[in-house]
Image 1 (cartoon, helix red, strand yellow):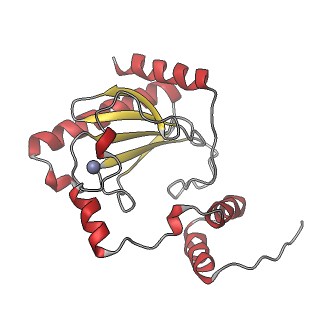
Image 2: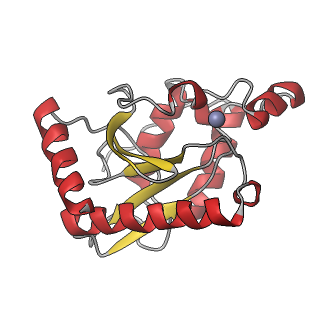
Amino acid sequence: MKKIEIALPDEVADQLAFIAAQYINVPNLLTYAVSQLAGDERLATWSDAESWRKLMSGETCPICPSIHDDEVTPDFGYVIAKLRISRFVLVSNQQVRGYCVLTCSKHVAELFELSAAERAMYFDDLAQAALAIQRVYQPIKLNYEILGNTVPHLHCHIKPRYVGDQVPHSPLIEVGKLTLSEQEYRDQVAQLREALR
Ligand SMILES: [Zn+2]
């Protein structure tokens, strides 16, 4: 086994120590560290109060301007369907096979900002999207991540879990990027649309 010594900025080392306390897979961790050093935004500090307020209110929300578009940029993903109060997208980074995001069509940061009827619609959409993913990819479990600490516009990451993935008792972290061919994305989008019926 080869040992290498590397010097890390304190904040990177602290972040890694924090992650290492939760995730024990070292290759994943190192890949993650490299992506951080390469300028990954996850190391950024919280926005200042005024910038955060504008993000929370939707004023500078990066999702809102394109939320009703039929296509999203291939950098991020491919629209599968518009559901009752959300948009269902196959994420470009398919390192987790079947990874999708369900974004609320309305700008809210927290679930309690939706009316009871809207919330019911959002969770119905989520269940419908999850069932389509289950049918197409046959994972052993689905993870639902509603985070929003980077972009506070309600969205849920739906990540399928498979036997043999690296962190069976933890959420998956993104440790790189797996890009498919254009045809593969189109095929999977078609399968997911079919599975929604
Ligand atoms: Zn928004």
